[in-house]
Image 1 (cartoon, rainbow, N blue to C red):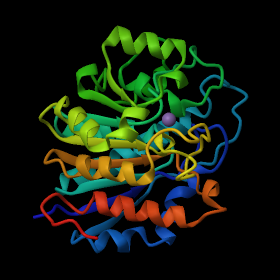
Image 2: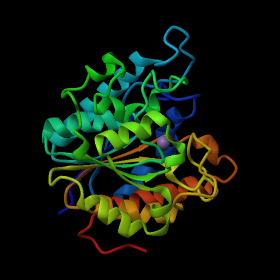
Image 3: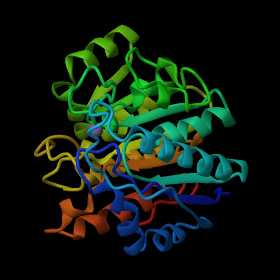
Length: 306
Ligand SMILES: [Mn+2]
């Protein structure tokens, strides 16, 4: 029996480099995401949205821009996800920035401290207001989950546990090492973080995902996807345009997500950094994306649908 699915929106670009990602959940809803999810046989409920936040430059705190708004968004995701888990449902969170994964894990570790996180992203997101000059919190999320030095106290202290995650609860998939800062590479090595590359994910999505899942704890599983892991030529969806002609196609990402969301431990999928304007010239890619998500969430105990 498939659990119910609650869809939660996090319409925010507060942690971004520019506006755009706040529109993702509205656009996917307009494309019929919820009705498509209902065709998988699940009962699907709309859990509503957190605050609408559109990025603007933060000249008062330029190295941790819009910190209070990010904390507000993370707190809203936490509350929405916690309510869905209490009701026995699985969760789909549509962001927004990658900081939504903090809200998901904040709720999931409160529900069961043995929770694990599979993080599909071209980036480690281990930066801090000190390690990078751009001040965009969207690639600082896991640094705050791991309570690294020089992170923003207001965000770390908004989380129920400290650290929210230990390194053995986290497994990266799809990392492009060349896109990491020196600080991130040092932290990944120091903490023994486990990861595999965007190239490996493109070549063998099923095998790489299976290996990553085997390294995660037995407790409930959250899956986070930054769509920047995708080959931007195949699927121009991400805020970041740096993934042209590298990384998995949307079909390959779909294989990875179907394996991860079909895992018996699965409870939550979060999708981040989708800027619908990137697909303005080829809107079919947004429909393909909806199909990919629906296929992944159809449940492991159902036969595959064509
Ligand atoms: Mn990323």
